[in-house]
Length: 346
Image (cartoon, rainbow, N blue to C red; front, top):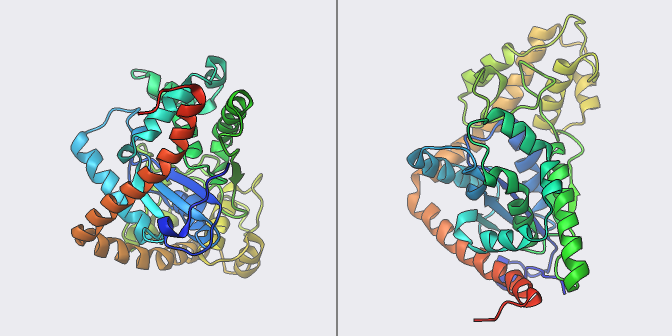
């Protein structure tokens, strides 16, 4: 039996397959987060019933200030809505407000092998960055991620290239469980957007743009950066000595990255963007053009964010209502799982 979100839950009249996605509340999302993830979430709302989660439970694998953390979580949920996610038609909520995430994660831990978790490249990378805090949560992070996805019978998961390994593990866990207990979980598929799936650093264009960048803020465009800051960061972006604007990731990673950003900001293909900008007159003009396009894309989104931030009553209502709706849905799968493994019903 598969679960579909019906009209009484999400407000539509057509049953649609489910999408789940989420983001950590570890800082203001970057341009890469928006182009590679949230912009695609907005488009997918038309054809799917969607759950968009602030994955605050995932966020505590690193040490944090509780007061700042609460502010970041609320900021991210507000940004979700400002960027175009619909909390009425779909569900926008905090992971920690749905206890079933943690309950299912524990159960799935018992169907996940140590060797599988030890092979996760993200665990290896984060262990090197946080050598003083290699905790069990960091190791079992992909199991909680699997629980997030499987809890809602998710059909499609929008991901970046760096998350493919985690989704494959999720699929392996679900398949293993189903072989033992029957057709309990939907096996999710990935969705990787054709353009802008991986936006690179402005100063180090062979590395992914990361919102957690601390060494050099010029590497990252944050979604709440003021227009003048965005323009300055693009003017400082690394290019090369070829002085030609082409889609050539091997020889021209910096130029290709800027072309990709421009294409996404102006709703073109990278090839179309390269044709438009081929004779713009040097890298200086090129970088200014890209910066202007990003400012134009983000200004209305930033305006909407600050309007929503000021409307605390509305955001509080969204938080409460969406948590209730997510909890109702989560209990459907969790009850099936508990029954399957032999827990006694309440």
